[in-house]
Image (cartoon, rainbow, N blue to C red; front, side):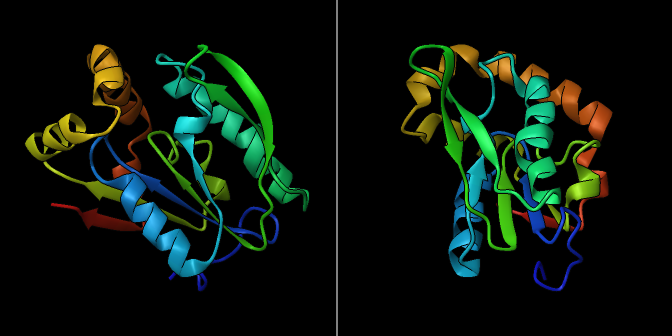
Length: 171
């Protein structure tokens, strides 16, 4: 499906895998990227801290998508969660396909660059159980409600599920 979609970021086809925390985006995107043989960019690596969901959108546009339009590889700055500060610059070589995974990847200002937007859905109780089972659950727990509020506000404005090309029930 992705390979049949039009390239909208220069010659690159970009698929965003979007959904609430605990929906299963990371695992699904990893499987898709492995099957497609393409790089996968996790927005967890770009968010500028626990209050950075909305702030990540222009970073994705400027560091990842606009370079693809110009025929360049994305260069982006990894966020160092241990230090709570920006970390090293990264370069992601892209050969025509790129997956972007994370809350915010289906933002309105990013959609014109996307060849395919997938919304991953899971019920709230299942998402909560998955979040509790994560390896980083103890690190995430103090920020869980803060992040959930950002998601709610973000999705009320951007409505990625309503704009998705593909809705995946991940129960």
